[in-house]
Length: 160
Image 1: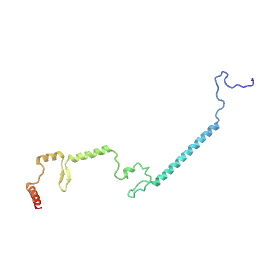
Image 2: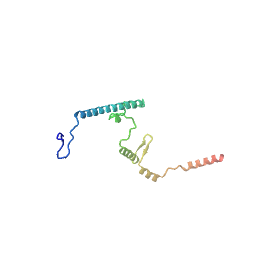
Image 3: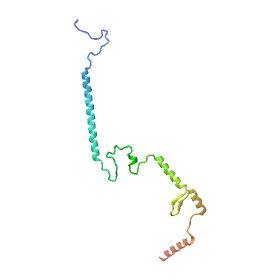
Image 4: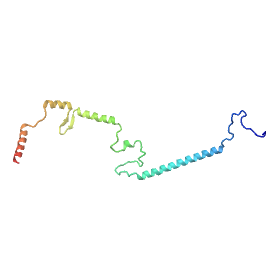
């Protein structure tokens, strides 16, 4: 028993593991991890290329009436919609556009202007039109025309 070698702390507090990881095994693990990552990236790029070619093949042809369309519509230049995109365009600022339309309508309703200058037709503000209507009254047919119309109806009904 005197030949037995005792390793560790004689006080009995435990000991650390004597066998460490070899640097060779760590390098093999990192190499396998790097190769796996590269293979994954290559495989994913291949799948994306396959799907991209398939999507381009199944895309319907562009109408011959439309001109200046980029080949790949998924990547459009920043200035493309403003300069080339045909009407009707999407609304960009609905509130201000609607406000502009309402202001133009208000201007038309409450101002004087020509409707047809050659025919002499004008528009007048609503309040002024109501004042004129109150002063002059509604336009009516003259009495003899109304009597003639009633008389002709009676003659046509009596002859049947």
